[in-house]
Length: 164
Image (tube, rainbow, N blue to C red; front, side, top):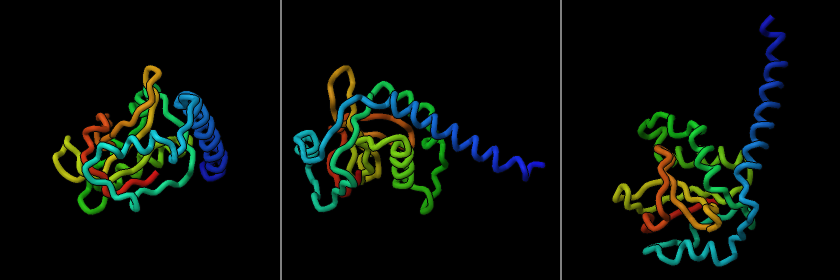
């Protein structure tokens, strides 16, 4: 009986997931876009002590800007930070990749995976960066995907690798 119901349940689950992603997309969209060739992307790199431009990869030219408040709500529902850290198997870079992938399941938002020197750990670390609109102001943020803690982008001192 269960074998017969499985295809139906799988189909229903896929349909619900699709609807859920569309709802989140509408909520997360700040109704703005950013082009990586524009000054906002360049401003992100201006204050960094060390940036290696050849290690910055853009998958697309234009990205959607996140609504900051809705992104905070989404983070509370997301379970990436609940994953268990496993040395050499699920380290900081895996958390950053998973979180970026989950956001991209919803839409093409300006969320990247980065490797660089961060002040909150006083060392090199993988983390996420995102561009969001908060109270009418658009700016860059750093996100620790293992804890969902958001930092000022100024807490990032250097970037060795960044992929959008």
